Length: 123
Length: 176
Image 1: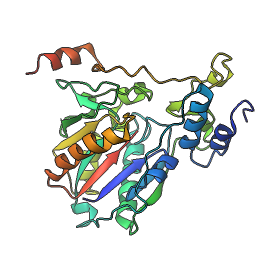
Image 2: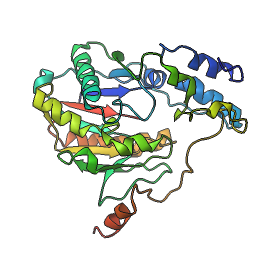
Image 3: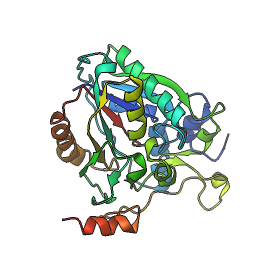
Image 4: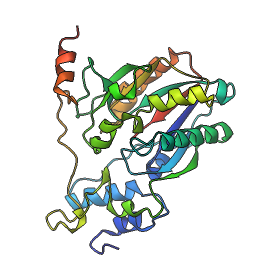
């Protein structure tokens, strides 16, 4: 089965080495682009698909050319899981090196309480 | 340049035009926190290759997102190596898709799930003729699994079974 893997984490995808990948220079958590920007998202997908169709070698990571902004300033605040809050690096308490992940609990984590009610009433 | 950063962090953050090196960032962060080194999975040297069977404009595409997407009525993912898979009807708008994940900032994706689970955009690309069709079922999973063994032995085979049961030409993988 042919696959195409979108990515905004170049080094990780290069390490995983999937058959076909398309890289966009975006903060983690935004693999398809800016929220509420359908044209950006469509453009990214169009370019990724076009790149995939042109690939003829396994392990190709094609750049889509889509990036968050021109100056890439967000990269100065990049963390292993996203972006540090503005000013986060000057927070003497964390020094930009705190563990920002949520606790990994083993019970379902619903977006809304109504989701929990719906799931628990679904047979 | 932030001089307090470790070398790996500085290097990985330095170039505005080069991609962020998340492997170096993670190494530096784990080191700073006193954690044992993150164990990266060992990938195959040469990935498999299956040519596209037809032009993209004729291909039916299945969406598989690892950002933790589920739909109302389904049990949400938990955050401790959940290797489950959610079958999400692809004709439901992204606004009805929920996301849950312990690691990335969920606010943008909850505001517009298309940025990690682009069902609306894929429908539009079908209408444009860029792709031939969208599989009626999309798959959501939770990419935050810190056991390569469990991802390989539990999640991956379930994805393969689900994908092979679909009549599709291309699987679009959307990690976060």
